[in-house]
Length: 264
Image (cartoon, rainbow, N blue to C red; front, side, top):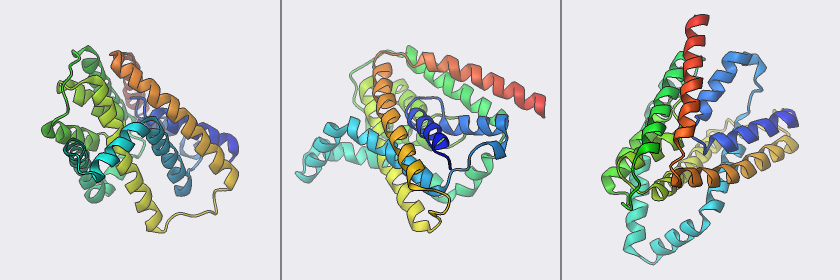
């Protein structure tokens, strides 16, 4: 992999991991537009490195929250134990889907841009509705955590934004915007590290197709853009600006659907 490819992929990963535009959907659209052979193949090692970079950027942004949460857990603080329990509960639907429906999910990532377009429109609708919802000071409850977790599992479909789906679901359930964004980003960190561990233990990681320099460039690009995108996303959620991204998702979704029918 060339260093320029690594830089571009790192920037895309850093932005789309946090901004509600669906990284998986855009990857499928890119393959459809450029052709599978025109898109640089990412090695599993490179993918792991990029995901680790964005997970690290999340930890940096929420370092105080994570430190206080861990301290509270170790000291037995009930409030922090309850919050950790809600995080664990929210992870269960995605874990179930990832473990038992992995092959079915992979089958959907086959260049079906009509499906991607439809899912982008669904994402856009969620963002539009969430942008118009009234802000509250409500904390996320146990039922909310489970429903947000279900939305995260659904977001494994190409075209559904994980951050967009989880934050929108939380806001539409009447939760405080800032707390919704915080919960959305914290709930995905354990899943990312779990996926990294799964990939490492699979034995499929190879150093043959990746050299140290592209890996380093990709990591730095994903980490820096991830810091920027995560901070920006929190600000946008707090200011109820999610509807800006809804217009983008609507436009790209409609173009994708039209292109899919035209090419079909």
